[in-house]
Amino acid sequence: MKSLITAAFVTAGCLTGAAMAQTGSDWRAVDPEDLLLIEVEDGMIAIELAGWIAPNHAARMRQAARDGFFDGRDFYRVIDGFVAQAGRGEEADSIELPQYPALAGEFTVPAGSVTFTPMTDADLYAPTVGHVDGFPAAMNEAGSEVWPIHCPGTVAMARGNEPDSGDVEFYIVIGQGPRHLDRIMSVFGRVIDGMEHVQALHRGDPAVNSGVIADPAERDTILSVRVAADLPEAVRPAYEIMRTDSQAFHDAKAARRNRTHPFFFETPPAVIEACHMPAAVRRAG
Amino acid sequence: MKSLITAAFVTAGCLTGAAMAQTGSDWRAVDPEDLLLIEVEDGMIAIELAGWIAPNHAARMRQAARDGFFDGRDFYRVIDGFVAQAGRGEEADSIELPQYPALAGEFTVPAGSVTFTPMTDADLYAPTVGHVDGFPAAMNEAGSEVWPIHCPGTVAMARGNEPDSGDVEFYIVIGQGPRHLDRIMSVFGRVIDGMEHVQALHRGDPAVNSGVIADPAERDTILSVRVAADLPEAVRPAYEIMRTDSQAFHDAKAARRNRTHPFFFETPPAVIEACHMPAAVRRAG
Image (cartoon, each protein chain N blue to C red):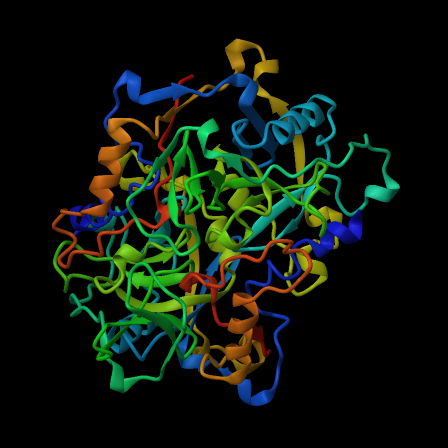
């Protein structure tokens, strides 16, 4: 029975793609300047910043991290199945914190400015879905615009009702990809390691004050946020991402689309939902 | 800024539907005989059993719970973004545990045997999606068969390669709905409370032994699994589920499909992805 149980999800469960074919050119290193490390009591959350879509938001996060802005703040609004939010927080008015001007939204980019690798799969929210440099993304019908999409692990700036009102409040998606937020939020990164620590964050009640955890003692504290480039190389974690324009990634998509493991006694529909194809990540140090 | 931040997700974040209109007839009570309570150190996980699709699997879970089978077992295979699995476990051969015969798969039911409320939304995996009595579900093109679908919180029996090989190993979906498992797994319930405790379970490495956590000390122990009906009424939790064939649920879908909150400065596509419309749950005791 043991082997049967283990076999049951070998194919189905390969969400991180850790077992995918590994050749040097199919992977790229994450730039330490684009690697944001959030330390919570439960462990380290590693985020790759997405300069291709949100250079100003990425720069803001680096700046705020270097200012020590986030250290001691907390994940004060955590809604199971939706998002974990941190930043200035509910006590903003009573604590002396650096101020940052509101940022202009960074929602879409001209398709010509990036390498968008389309998937052949249908999608409910966009004419075409695919990837840009490891990030799940979509393209408009004219093929002129590209934007990142909201999947588990997507990191974006919160804002008010105005498009250009985000400053330093951010959220991490912890549930079924809320695709209705695509194109109207400034997505600036994705979690590439430690997602289980995000999932372990203490939750608020979504029916009370939009999920804000009333008692600060019940919130998970952010011990620190650091840019990996600022850490000594000896202690700096390093990651590689499977190139989403590589043959290896192409093959991984084909394998997921056409499952041949005997576990599938009936063949599932030959489609990959866009959030089900995250680019594989591996530690490189 | 505080109010802006709070407002940001009032509409977007209402995943549990806790704020939906509440009238008596729009809700039904969960039968205590269908309410399975899993106690882990982090808290209580409440599962509603789905007798409409898997009466034999539901009966098996009640039986095993009443045998005390699960008490002291653990979530030994937990893959972030995919599933948390428990049951007999990896040490099955070395521990004296009750044996249960393999169950015939319960994958689909004749449409005529259930009340299926269709959504008008497209879907990538099935011709029609909707709900049966609070459970997300799908229907075939002929309108003759209905089955539950895999969304966050879906609970199903694991199995070997053979369709009829499940016995008492179960999994809970903790990531983006793995819809490729629809129709080939015996779904027997869904988590209606305590999903945050499932999400807090210690993870395994999906690249090593299919995510099995090698060190038993690192696994979260199941303190107990009980059928609510067996608890004294005074300490028994009680829940109500919004009827998915009610006007209130119809209205909730319409509101989600057509978002009018000023936060949406551009209107999202008028579609609801099936796993984004869980039936609302409320405590009734």
